[in-house]
Length: 160
Image (cartoon, rainbow, N blue to C red; front, side):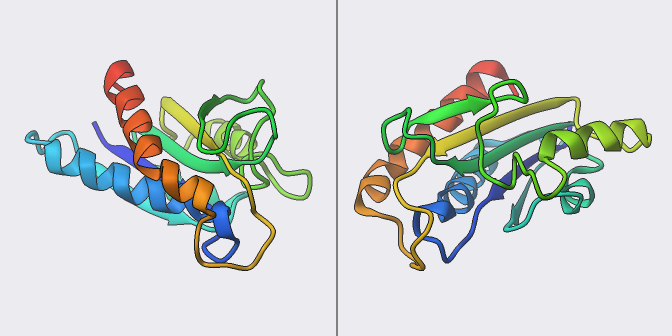
């Protein structure tokens, strides 16, 4: 079963990079634990959304998306599961100017593309996604190890 871990974010907008960073760490941890070559895990990082995502996710059986969210409803660093109904997410997941991830998945399926059947989306509550900075805020940096552990636990628990 081919699995894709898709890290999303913007590497120069402070905490918005947390999805990119966490995805790399989750991939490294899971990939080092795999002993079965049939359970291939791939990593892709994207700083864009929309229809570009179709090319990235096509051909996989499972998709794990990690991105930042800024809602003010959760503590900084809290990991939240996202679905199409929750209406949580960054502009890469939910966009009024482009196709959202959810719309891209639906479109790919209607077009007959091999779109992952199992999709899990993790949003990470952040503090700052507006300042140009290649570093995470101290609040998110402090939570990074816990964020990665939480996502790995959820992946293993649900056998995503």
